[in-house]
Image (tube, rainbow, N blue to C red; front, side, top):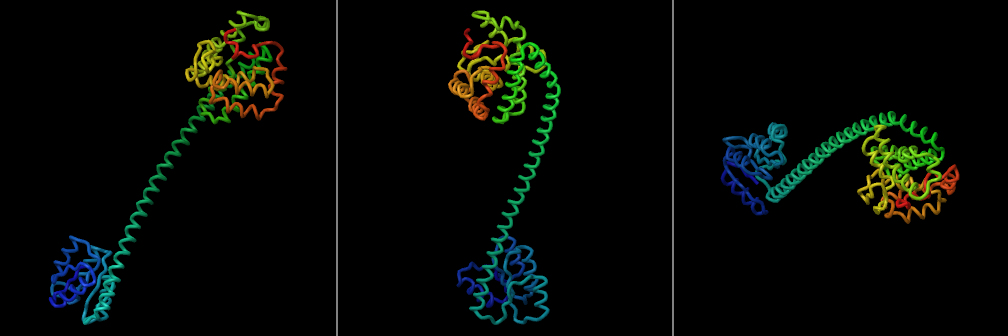
Length: 369
C-alpha cells in the first residue's frame, strides 16, 4: 500500500495505521518518488494527500490510474469542494475520500474495503483473460475444424467424382461380363449376379472404404469369368484330374481378363486369389492369412456362400466352421449378419436354378482335387 503525503506527521500516522492492520506500507513525501514506486512494483491501494507542493493528489492519482488501473485510489483532503469532487470523478476515478481529521476506525474500514476491491478487480481481470484465452483457442480450433471439414468435403467430392467416373467407365465392362457369362451358362451368370449383390450388402454392412468397395464389386463380376475358356461339356462331365485342373486354372485366366479389361492390379490380384484359403490350403499360389489380398478375403466366403448349394441353416454352419480355416475370421461375422437376414429359401432356390454342374459344390474344400 503506497502512502504519499508531504506532511511528515500525517505520513507517519497513516503508515502506522496501515501497518497496524497487517498491510505492508510504503511511504514517501514526494509524489514523483511515488510514481517511480508505481513503475517498479504493484500496490493494492494508494493513499494521497490532495495539497502537496510538487503535485496535487488528484494529479498523482490520475497518473497512478494509467500505471496501475486496478489499484484503489484514496484521496485525503481537508477541504472537499465541488471542484475537487468533479475533478476526482472525471480524472482520478477516486475510490474514496478521507476528510481531515479522520476517524481511525473509518479509515481502517476504508482500507480493508479498498484492498478487497483491488483483489476482486484482479480476479475479474484474470478470469477475463482466461476466458479470452479460451475463446481465442475455441475460435482457432473452430477455424481449424472448419478447414479440415472443408478439406475432407473436398476430398470426398473428388473421390466421389473419380468413383462416379470409374463406375461409369466400368459399368459397360460389367454389363459385357454379365452378357458373356449368360451366353456361356445362365446358372453361372445368375451366381455371379448374386455374388455381386451380396458383396454390395457386405460392403455396406462392414462400412468398407469406397476404394475397397469398388474393387470388391469388380472382383465379384470377374472372379469366375475364366471358366468360359473351358467347354461346358468338359465342366459338366469333368472328373478326376481334369476337374482339378479346370478348377485350378480358371482364377489365373480370370486375372488376365481383369487386367485386359483395365481394372487394375488390385482387382486382378483379388480375382486370382479368390480360391486361396486362410490356412494356406487354397490355390493357385497357396497364400496364407494376410498374404491373401484384402479384397479376396472379402470375396472368398461370399463366392462360397453363393455356390455351395446348401440351405440357409447348413450354409451358416459351414461359414462358422470354416472361419479362420478357409475364410478370414474378420470377414465371416459380417457375412453371417447378411445370411441370417436372408430368407431361408435363397440358397436352395439359387442351387435349384442351376441347369448343370458348372462348379463343384464345395470348391474351397476341393483344392487338392
